[in-house]
Length: 190
Image 1: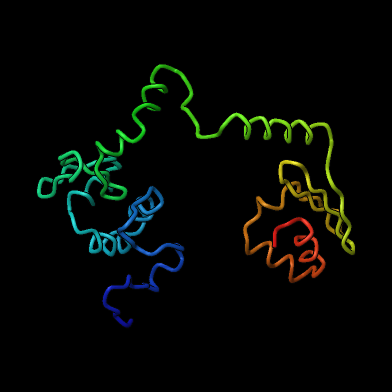
Image 2: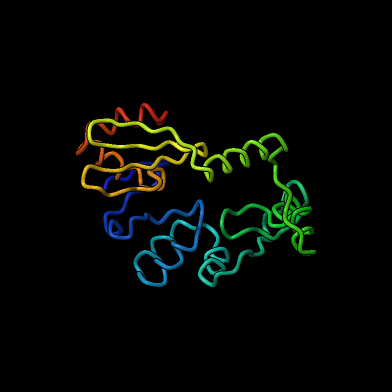
């Protein structure tokens, strides 16, 4: 393995996990892998600079105390385990929504009235059965007002929403059915 200064190392031992031990964002999937694979845990621990952060991460605690480095904005010492940001500042960014949720109200969203009414109109149009149909070779497509793309394949299989598939699956389908690329251009995907 070649060491490159300033770049994260790719360790071939962890190919089956589909994850490399990276310390910039710690998440639940990495925690599950650490509990299942001690080698992954050791490799990740070497990349996490603060042992208190790694201990809190393994325990599933959302925050830890970092006394040597206070927050420049609020002066707090409590840090988020996930990304080392200030826990107090993180809570204050969404304080109004937290207070609303505590009282049982839904949090405010950034959608304005016009966009909400547009979404409702498109959902109603889809519910009423409106769509634009297209045929490309043996493929039959329906493009709905909400953006959903239904595809009927030559073997009769109907995919109700192609956007829910993984990207590599769509590429593989385009290799098998060249007319799918033309259909996706028609649908506005390219």
